[in-house]
Length: 274
Image (cartoon, rainbow, N blue to C red; front, side):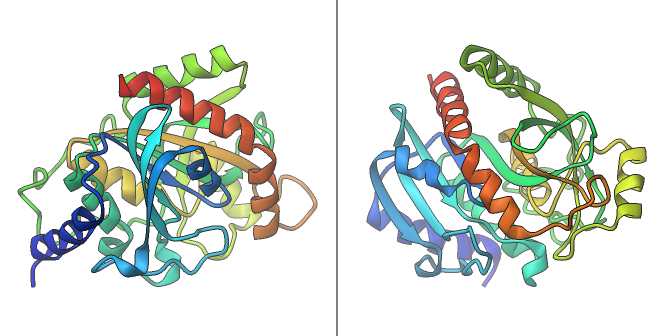
């Protein structure tokens, strides 16, 4: 069975449950899944019930597809995601992005919880992703190209759409939410980076470091989707402060900024959904 046949099975299952055709997709990172509580007329579908979806194994990732309305705009939200460090191949990690595209999504908002590398940034702040560093040197587009979605050699000069970044920054100003902007570096995990690695990443131009987002952004851009990335800076990266890092800290800080994060995303969705 080829990938297109698999995707058709997934889409067929979802369409039997709801006919909603979302135009905006959301992928919600660690501790950020509560945004779905703000949605109305929702239909929730557990990942493991959708053909060819895997089950997330990470705390803070519920693992469900939620379709409904956010600020009156039809959206599809992935509450939880797959990570490379869970042992999934990148075609599994990015499979839900393909499904969002086939559902009708043409604008994708990617969110994550990550560590701040830039010493001018502070935990609890939000960062608009301007570009990324792929420090894993893996690419989800390796292998047979799906010509139905995009070209063999896609351009990567603007993975994160400038137009959407401007919308996000304007929304931050309206809501009086401080937004940083910077380069997100993708690290495989699951171990956090060493202090030496963080110094290297800073030299290379990284402002934040995390274990997700980049594969999904590459696949979405390949399919012609507009992409916006928003990072919740939950901690300072390894070696900047004396304390050790923990996933619980990530979840705790994400919970603290939940209100401002939700307000920002709702404002953005309303703006780009019109």
